[in-house]
Image 1: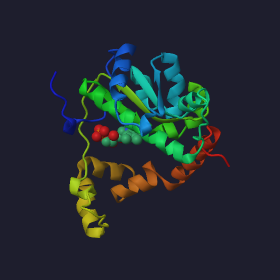
Image 2 (image 1 turned 90 degrees about the vertical axis):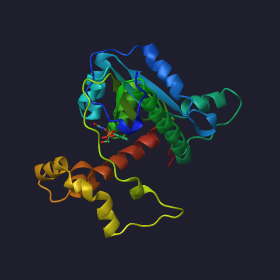
Image 3 (image 1 turned 180 degrees about the vertical axis):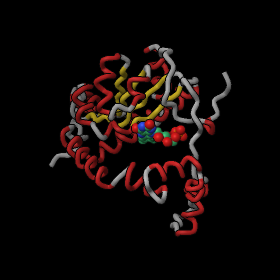
Image 4 (image 1 turned 135 degrees about the vertical axis):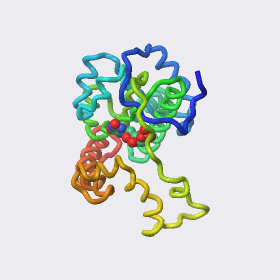
Length: 249
Ligand SMILES: Cc1cc2nc3c(=O)[nH]c(=O)nc-3n(C[C@H](O)[C@H](O)[C@H](O)COP(=O)(O)O)c2cc1C
């Protein structure tokens, strides 16, 4: 197999019928678990979904994004302070992890292992897609996956062998996000230098017209990631953190 070139990577949303054995997923997760983790506490759990009926139940919780039913494997990466707290309790130690700071620590661990898993899977010729709707409908996912207190579903990944290789996405220039020693704030000139090329891309021009907008930014603010939606999801997610014991008032 050719050496994986990270600069050529892309999200894969269509998968072939080829299955991935459970043992293979475990093997890749074992490799990924060597990633750094807060105090070596490994504050995460991963729920693996391969069963067709379970995927059908998961699908509407991700707004029926076709990758959920279309991928051989769906993985829900969950913040998990439950397992570690139980270890403390069974070891005559009093856990103090029912708070927001502990959620953040566990969220960092969870994101890091998720990305490490993606890199391992991609280097083995598999394709992945992150599914960010996990935090939109976390309550339903908690119920479906039986998640106890001090666990929260954070991010989902669909995995499979690529059925087609889509175009690579663009990225802003590295100088657009790097600051030398101190943050130098942006003005209209460097903002248009950094993002200007996006407005010129044919596919984005099409996207703007299709949505009856005049700029690409409006497609983000008015359609894809609206303030109203963000506020709604924030409120819901705060309730999830209360329900799961990370916020106590
Ligand atoms: C946190 C996160 C959430 C994402 N959620 C979704 C999603 O719900 N559906 C989807 O099709 N792609 C999702 N993606 C994939 C992005 O759309 C994709 O990474 C981005 O457009 C860049 O494309 P590339 O990965 O091919 O370079 C998500 C990516 C991240 C990092």
